[in-house]
Length: 216
Image (cartoon, rainbow, N blue to C red; front, side, top):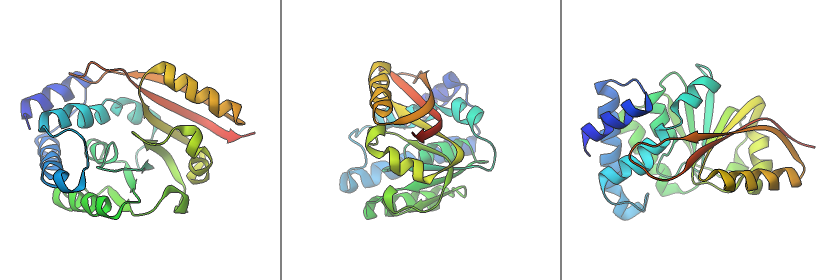
């Protein structure tokens, strides 16, 4: 991994960082590179592509998470997969606690290995499907997960009263269509679509923020 690329990317987003943060992200990418051939964690095989398309992509919503959640809150990362965005955010926001929900056993093993290797103390892995989860969370997030209308009931069941959803999405028009389907299926909510800027990535990224979410 190009350390200077990581430094530049974090600076462009405006994220404060230390050598410990840089080392942690570097070790995380090393672990992905080591296990990716077997576990098929990400499609990209170049560490700098993983840095841009996955790490910086996850980090791009840092300021939204900082402003919309509070210190000590518990955030669930649904279908965490290789740990995006949960592991990246847990490294960048050590005062928030992250629960990585992942149903594939091998990927859970990978995630636990990363948490141990990088010594991340503010995250844990739950090896179960979202429909099997019984806890309720202050916030939920997801990246490259199901469309919201496919999992709305499951998300609402685990979202605490007053909780917030922060979902990584692509082009704004697609998010608008997804929210229209949600409303058509009887859900009400306050929504905001935030444009994200991912350094060195010339693709549209958004964060869909949902509050006061309920089924009418």
